[in-house]
Image (cartoon, rainbow, N blue to C red; front, side):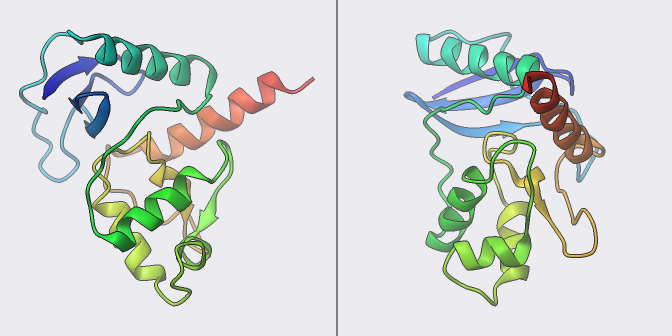
Length: 162
């Protein structure tokens, strides 16, 4: 198990790796308590950690979602929701209902919201791309981060367009 911090425009992100797989990503302050995230070391110590740090840096520079091995745990339904979220292209959004259908449970829009709230690897499992039918929906991460991430991805796509 490796715990380290990566710099980002949102502040330092605390990451946990188990072997080559990311198992957790936390924002600099808990959205629930406002307390600083504790326990992250200075930087990655392994080759896998260096690869994750470079991939996140590239995402924050250019908006391209990193292709990293993730191991979030969770229930079978949560895993299906998180896979459906990873299939939503950067700069686009999907409603909770659309994600429920993609996860095989058309009537489970609220459960999709709960799966997003329990997402242990935000940004890499892009719950910021999940929206309500009449607005941006909820976000359990750092206040303002959902809007920033969506704008960042849209801006990166606009810069890349010919």
